[in-house]
Amino acid sequence: MKIAIIGSTGKTGINLVPECLKRNHSVYALVRTSSKVPEQIRDNPLYHMFQGDVKNDSAVLATIENADVVISAVGPPDNAPTTVVQDTTIAVLKALKSLKMKPDLRRPRFILLTSGGCNDEIVKEASWGYQNIVKPHILDNVYDDLIKAEKILLDAGAEDPTLDYVILEPPQLVPVPPTGTYMMMENKCENVGKDWPVPFADVSLGLLDLAEGKYPEFNRKRIGIGSTTLVDSPFFTEQVRSMIWFNLTYKCTIL
Image 1 (cartoon, one colour):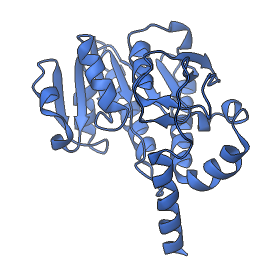
Image 2 (cartoon, helix red, strand yellow):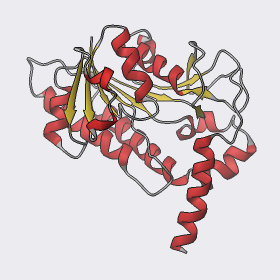
Image 3 (cartoon, rainbow, N blue to C red):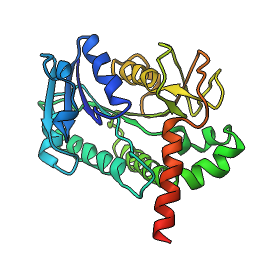
Image 4 (cartoon, rainbow, N blue to C red):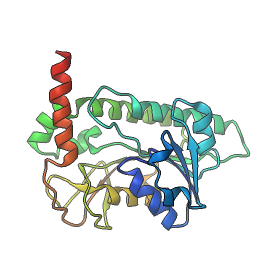
């Protein structure tokens, strides 16, 4: 299988790419900074790197035009105002529309990674602190970008019933060793752990399983993912702590 990945050097992507290669899939990665790609990945004959970013239409098209699946694992690095996930979604949809005009090329499935915080059905099951502090104040700009990106894809799907896509909405992602298992449900993040933590590596497994067509029933749906094994990770992970510090410095600066 040929899998195009945008966001391959991020916290999810660095787990996803090796797993793809381990399963003998060809990887087509759109990369802005080639130095972020480990040498052992670059030297793998199944790995194909395309230099550029999502604002370069030709680079995006070249990355995905021969793929069976395109995965967006892009995520904002902090809580500054951003449109990075929206830009990625728009760029992929534009390329997919271009491929639709070429009957000799099959349009790949589009898998968009966002967050459970984009889904009201998932959010209502979260803790008071998450609903009233984390989402509206600590990660407000992150969610603004992710929610708008989801809407762009859902609107495109409503206009084009042939568009093949899945939106994967994980809860709190944590940089801990993988459990090797997960569960998926439509509009839910069922989880046996506390505070909904899910390892980045487990989400990568879910993304790849979706890419391989393991869950055809989730086509054109928003899917939550959770852990089946207790993940012992404190609420204030490195990512959350950095987001809090960024908000304190950034928002105080603009006042």
